[in-house]
Image 1 (cartoon, rainbow, N blue to C red):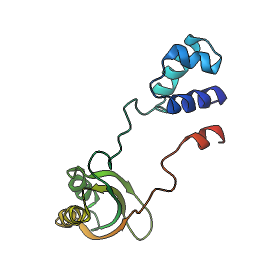
Image 2 (image 1 turned 120 degrees about the vertical axis):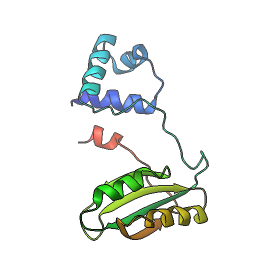
Image 3 (image 1 turned 90 degrees about the vertical axis):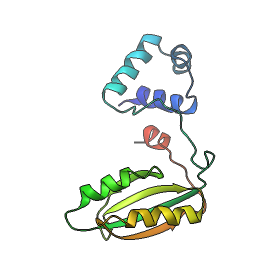
Image 4 (image 1 turned 45 degrees about the vertical axis):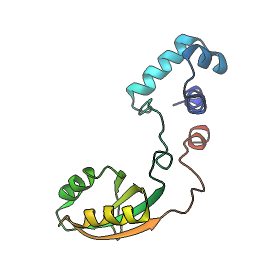
Length: 150
């Protein structure tokens, strides 16, 4: 990835509905160059999707929590299948250290979050949870600094 690719991605993130012609104009390159670069970035899976970013809080799930899980030895796949069935679990990451998985979970209320955690704990594959509720987001997901200053 070079400087043009980085500027292309940063511009697309800043203006998600921008057309190829306008993108080319802003970057000072030909439309064909933009198309070729986009095709390359898509083929390499640098660009993961073109879908809208949805704010779970504004979609009715204002509680955001991170839930650490300890999994019974040898039962990771079973635990992941249990988690996959819970729509409020947005992401699950395998981790090193004291816990095995980290889940990003949203809920309608703290009572709802408690229900979600209770449902997770019904799986014999999950031994223990440790939950942290976020109070605010100080730095939202961002990729631009990494692209511009690798």
